[in-house]
Amino acid sequence: MSAIFTPENMLFILAGLKTTLYISVISILLSTLFGTILGVLRSLTRGVPRAIAAVYIEVVRNIPNLLWIYVIFIVFRLKSMDAGVVSFTIFTSAAVGEIVRGGLNSVGKGQWEAARSQGFNLLQVLWYVVLPQAMRNMIPALVSQFVTVIKDTSFLWSVIAIQEITGKVTILMGRYYKVNQVFILYGILALTYFVINFAISHFSRRLQKRLSY
Image 1 (cartoon, helix red, strand yellow):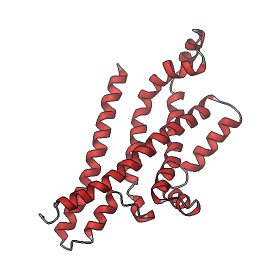
Image 2: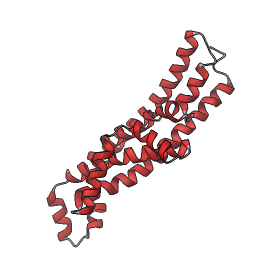
Image 3: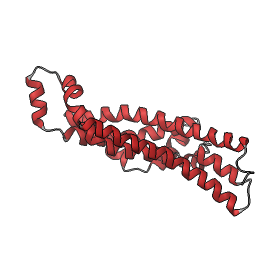
Image 4: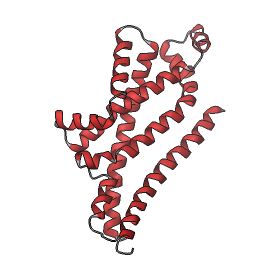
C-alpha cells in the first residue's frame, strides 16, 4: 500500500484532477451562458429564433455526448483539450437550455404581467422578477447536469487520450499488479469523484434553501 501513496503518485493523480476540473469548470460556465440564451429564445421568442433554439436543443440532446466528442475531435481536428471543452459545451448547453426553458415556464404569467404593468422592460422582468423565482426550480436539474459533466469527463481518456484523473489512475494501474493495489487506486478515483460531486450537491441544497426565503 505504501508504494502507492508516494509523493510522485499523488502529484500524478492531482495533475489529472486539475485537468478534470479545468474541462468541467470551463464547460459548465460556457454551457450555462449558451444554455440560458437558448432557453430564453425557446421560451420567450417567436419565429426563426425560437425554431433555431428548439432544433439545436432537440438535435443535440438526442445524440450521445460520446459521439459529439468523436465528431469535434476527428472532423474539426482540434487539440484534445479543446475538443473536450467544445464537445461538452455543445452537449451540456442543450440540456441547460431545456432546463432554463422549463424554469421560465414555471413562473406564472401573472408575475410577468404585474412586472410589465410597473413599466419594466423584458430584460428587467427577467432579471428582477422571473429569474430569481425560476432559479429555485432550476437548481436541482442544473446541479444534476453539472455533476454529470464532471463524471462524464472520464470518457475523455478512452476516447481522445486526455489524461484527466481517470486516465492518470488507469496509467498507474498499469504499474501495479496486485489486486489490492488496483482496488486501492479504484478507491482513490471513486472517492475523489464522490467528494467533488457531494460537495456540489450539498452546496446546491443550501443555496436552494436560501433562495426559498
